[in-house]
Length: 273
Image (cartoon, rainbow, N blue to C red; front, side, top):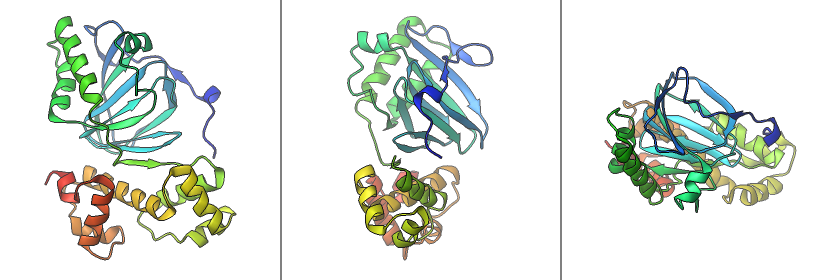
């Protein structure tokens, strides 16, 4: 199914009333929202007039935009620009903490440069504590303004694309990508996949390169590593050996090397074990 057009995508008002807990001491132009969601829930495709920084203080979520799929474990946060359609899947029980930024505030604070596209950031201990402090109920207006500024300063220094799987827009290529994502642990043969989506292996290979900036093989590896990150983030008991076997790697060293190539860290380092 092709992605919704902008005209078909609902624009949601900033959810700061009714059942949503909101910090009303936010500086003008910034809205702070805390909300918990159960595992398995999906927030369907939508967009906001505000830009937003979405952080899960606990739990793992998956954010899908027209450009790709972002896995967001607890040590990551995702920046979503204003007007960008996105959907959120909750892969575990989530304690979501979201900062909404009005566009005039971003421009006034000269924080709009580099924030016109979506990206994931690695949440440092400092950024984590700054976000959590915004929701601790003790903030004065001056304290909140300082914390928001600190968050924005850290945001510009923490971009991390390790958990991103780019999604092609061309119909046949996107169908092939979704087949792989539905079973990222499988060994997908490009000839068979091309026949399934109604094209040639050569065309499909070319499409993956032009649409995702990755070769088909590299894209499949990224999808497999994203599946590994999801498992690491939602199952603390899983071992590296189990992951390697489940993802079809010949050995733990081979899996670790592929994981490091995508994320810059070994599975053990990523999990913080």
